Each structure stands twice: as structure tokens, then as C-alpha cells.
Image (cartoon, rainbow, N blue to C red):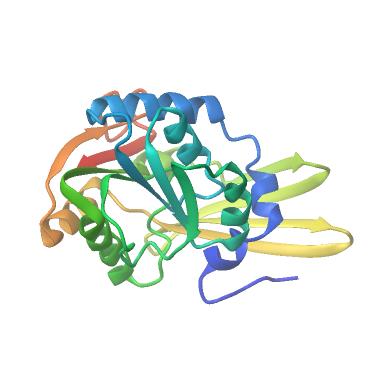
Length: 243
């Protein structure tokens, strides 16, 4: 059965299958990255952080454990419902569209794990950047952790089969019209499912264009979660810090 809505992420991210497929994401790596990036940005305990497109909250929880006041927002009601189990006095989650400013300002804003470039309309990428700017306190800093599209395309694994929780996912990756696609098909309870992830292959230059247009200043660029320098052909990540 084909599941489709106007935006692919609206349906796919809100299914239990998305979380089943990606259940083995590295929480320890996420915690280490949060320690390194908050230190790099000279953030202090009790400062406020917005986790933009937070999913089920693994980064937000890690940031809260480090002593920060954290708000996580995501478009998926299912993810937010799950994340709310972790709420406390300094950790909150809410359903919200990251293209629109949130009604509060923060000391830092994090957009992590390639949670950008999903939109059909180019203007929505820019709207997200301007929303980040609008939600930063004076002197605040932000992070976008995106894939290094050049590296991903060069090392693309075209076809892969992965079995998780007795469900066999058939994955087909390809590049088309400036986007990296991932077709995901599987069967569960005798029903066929098919979803497609689609992320724009944005480059550092694309982000710099958004930043310039929005009046944002780039601070640093890193190529992995150890915060090593960004190298176009060899770095798996494109991590941008800005203010």
C-alpha cells in the first residue's frame, strides 16, 4: 500500500515503522556530540536550547542531562507524544512547524541529524533559516548538522536490505533532480508499504547563500561529530555553527 501526503515526512516520520527502521541509532554518539558542540559554543548550564525537529528527543534529553533548559519541537505528533515521557521542569516538547518562529527566544538552537532540506519549496528552506534567526537571543548561536552531500553521493549504497523486529526493509537510494532519494518498501501483517525519503543535496555554498540573505554570520564548519575540520571529499557530515 502506498502511503502519500503532500509532504513525505508528514506521513513517514509519524509511522511506527520509521522508528523501527532507525531504532539502532547511536545514543552514545549523540551524547558525545552534544558534549563537544556545547563546549565548542561556550554554552553554560541553565542556558536555553531549542532542539529543532527533535524527533523522539534523544539529543534534547542528552542536552538536558548536561544541565541545559531544553525545548524540543517536531512536526510529528507521534514522536512528540513519545518524547513527552522524558519531560521535566527543564525539558519540554511540543508539536511545531520549524518553518515558523517559535514564540520564545533561546541562547542556542540546534537542528541535528540532517533534519533540513525536506521541503518541496525552496523558500521553506530559507524560511527555516529566518525562523532560527528570529528565535535566537542577542548573542545566541545555532548549529545545523547536515549530511555532506558530496560525500554521500560519492559513497551511495544503491540497494540494501535490513531486517528489524522481523520486518525486512528493502532500501533503494538514488540521486535525481538535485535530491537524494531513499525508497523504502516492506511488508507487515500481510500488507505492503512503500515510503520515500527525499532530501535536497544542499552544499556548504547553499547554506552560505541562505545565511547571507538572512543576515547570519558563519562561525565554524566541521566534518564529523568529533568536530574535525570539514573536508569536501572526505567528511561524512557538514556541521555549521553560526550567529
